Length: 190
Image (cartoon, rainbow, N blue to C red; front, top):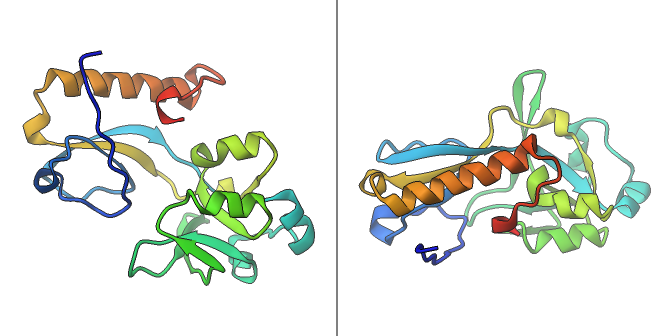
């Protein structure tokens, strides 16, 4: 109760010390040795589209077939959109030619729900729309392995009681969400 938060949303890699960021959520490998990193949530990456999209365009049976579909892709500025899949233990990296791209998934989800194309994201991110049958998922079995949502912070914040309390809370919520308590709401991320 004594912790106040200021949330900054960006998909660019920030210099946490220089930008005054105490805690960052990151997905994928973190290369900086100046950060303390905690695993929070294992991520399953999927593709999804509206049921009417799959009926009209067909459901692919292999990730490579997505190259023949209308895609809605997230990409950072200056980076070409690409989707990675684990096929037989090897990375299949597809360069996408999306009909719409954005630096964040948020504007892509309503487009996918309207049947305008295929989106890729974590099952966690897309769960609400999958549960409401607005999106139908595919290819969870091709998700890259060992992909996590991490909490990262600088060594200077390591001894803060507020940081320790926040990390304990986050780990507890993520453990509940990951299936130790079925259908548990992830209240702090809704």
